[in-house]
Image (cartoon, rainbow, N blue to C red; front, side, top):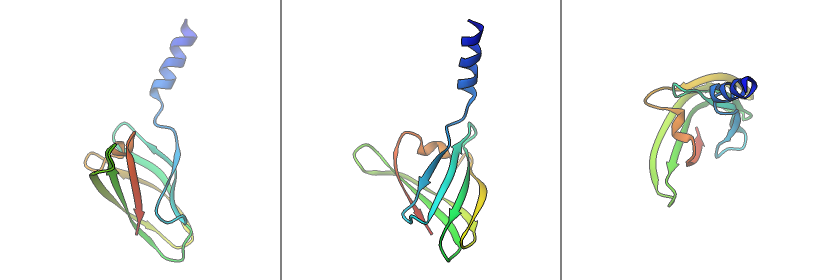
Length: 107
């Protein structure tokens, strides 16, 4: 019984599993993306282009495909490089992306 309780506590304390968020540009994406309980996203921003990546826009849709929300994060990722980053918070919570349809546009 104790083992089951310990396993249950460990599972409940874990954040959303890491994943890759693709953008409209296959050479720019967010790798190892996780969202913590405070609404902050932790990720590696990967930029495999020859230009600086400065912004990412998220467009959220309902089940009918109608736009219901959007937000943006400012980035600073040089050409052909990657950066560990943290974005989000209360106003721009990464939790908005959980369980919904969305599109990501990289600028």
